[in-house]
Image 1: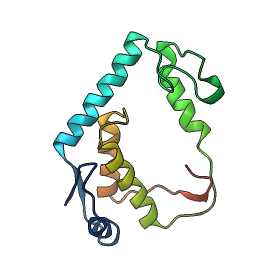
Image 2: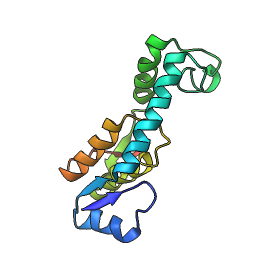
Image 3: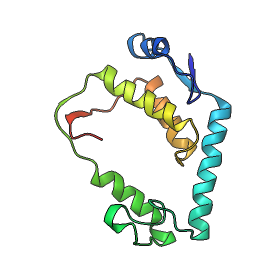
Length: 139
């Protein structure tokens, strides 16, 4: 079992995770940082502070304020607007690597995601559930 901290993942550990299917877990202190960062995001929304991409639109809509009741829909719409891709899917090892690297990055504790998101990514890795990711146009 390899423990992700957000800072210490090595090439050798990635090889074990990708080629040997070794399991992965999150370092508790890193998960605490994830939770603390999420609390900051929730406080920003609750207090109605203006923060790009959280309580405003994106790009040319950055001056559009998003009401508290619409913040969740904004994030959902952002994901849907980027849900595109064509072509053959990446090999399973590549999509597995994407999950691992995304979870590891989130464990730095600066992304604002809910801890549930990190836990689900790690659960997918451990259960060998891998997304089908088209090779062209995927974000």
